[in-house]
Amino acid sequence: MPARVVGGVPIPDEAYTLLGNAYSPCPGYATTCGALRIRFEPAAGHVPRGFVGGYLGAESVRLIVVGAEPGDPYPGENHAGDGTPPAQLESSLSVTAACHRNGPDAFHRNMRHLLELCWPGLSVEDQLSVTWITDSVLCSAPEEGGNVRRPVWRECRDRFLKKQLDIFPHALVMALGGKAAERLADIIEGRQWIQASAVAPPGANKPSARESWRLAADRFRQFMAPELRLLELAIDACLAYPPDKIVERRAALRAFERELPAPTYFAAIDYAIAGKYDVEPVPEALMRIAIAQRRRARTLVRRW
Image (cartoon, rainbow, N blue to C red):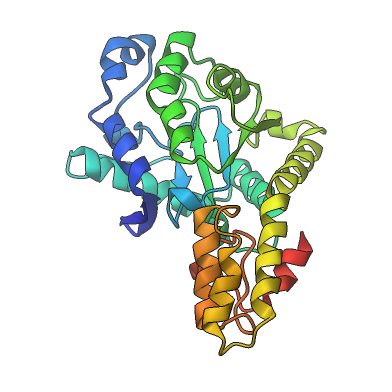
């Protein structure tokens, strides 16, 4: 399904429906989390937050980045809106997206560095088109960076995190930090996943942190390599025919229909029909023309 636009920020329909349930507040707050000092105070910025991405829809996401939990809200942060869950979600999503674009603190600088390692040369908007960023617990800890009790993170994991993973079936999962990895461990069976250091201090301040991000990005690029190689073969098959031979180009692509994930395959068809190989590239994300930059198609593929 495509993404919808909420407050100017795209979000996959499936994620919007799932995470909207966290703003009433979610049933787990009444049964578990509220009693263990988790705060739901929209006017003070304390709502479920920290998730963003999938701007082209769930099928296009190739990387899920999972952190521990959001830090404390910024001074003056307010998500009360008109008091309705959709308004609170819209406010939270808008702030999160803006912070990932321009946030000056260490967490957002480090996250942008990690995304650049994974998706080199793309804008933040393009990177978030094919990445889903979330936290294993959607509400802040009682004290920033402190402990979140096991009943709380199990409640949030089972109610929201596992279902978020299911929304993005083609993605590699990257756990940032030990807390995120622990919370993922019991629900990640059958999925490819890796662990790297947290991008938030204090874990991000360790000398080994940047090397762990580089190694994780290398693993992600290895994960993407088979899809990229198939796409390059599809490009070559199309380029064997001149731009006016649309029927032949489409027939050449049909041989890859079962091997390429659907978004990649249909993006390639769009290129073949439009005959745009010489003016628009297949982007690293490879899913939709919407994030193409104006370079030759195979230039981007070869960078991998």
